[in-house]
Length: 399
Image (cartoon, rainbow, N blue to C red):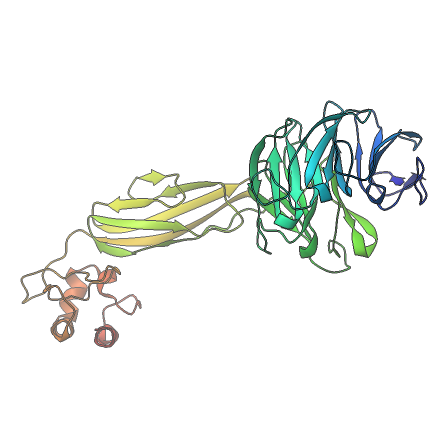
């Protein structure tokens, strides 16, 4: 064990390889209680050791096995607010909870992929409310439990996307309840809120600052600084409190024009994980749904505005929706044009309920009339902003 200041200045060390009290065989997990006592998961000795802040040996418990109080490669270790010690007993696929003297208080978990089951749990952390977070490594997820071991939630699956994991290992919780997970084989750290909503990520494979080679452990201090053991780069890296990136607003609409009343379905496509949505439809109506449907009851061009936000900031974007108050028949037809395929373009110019060559002829003959009497956006088939011969060609090619 080595001890450092928060700036990385060496303070002290203790331990040698061996089996006696104060000796270690591949220690992996470490935790500190409120009194400064240090608890070490002495992994290959299948035990926990307790030291005071200066490294003086105080106690040990465990031994190889699957009985209560025994371990099969304990990896992660944490101390809750009451001073109880929680251990991720990895190869027994369970969590064990002890008092300060090593007496077993409870245990939970078994091998499997169901809620409350584990596939080689590695990391463990406790938040200020006593909730327990466990990296369920072979199942590529995080599980959350009450202090009594009751399953609360889970998140994650195998992959390299946001909120996905490739062998999650270390886990830590800051004073605000944010959860930091070392995504070992993706060479990064991911940050979540207490419910498992993705907030931020950093890191990639490499040897530069902010890069990792199969990181393992993570810890957070009272100021929110994040410390990561960068395993195969043989170093510890310290990061300032992680902040969430502001979302970039984006959305799509299933139609962008048509005759009133026009129902339009909007799909939020914003990035960087927004948590709130504020829609303004340009006709005085609003919505806070992520994917709203709005009905425009009158004609006009409406600027639809979406503002998305999260803890990192906000972003805004706008798109126009063109709504016809009611189309006029194109002379000499007596029926108004229709949108036969629901794409917001009125290709059935003569209103007979189908797209055919007669629509091309009528459009060609009445381009000037259409431009003067109909909403241009509904007949501007090629999207160049005007009614012209290019629209005739488009209509012919798209019969």
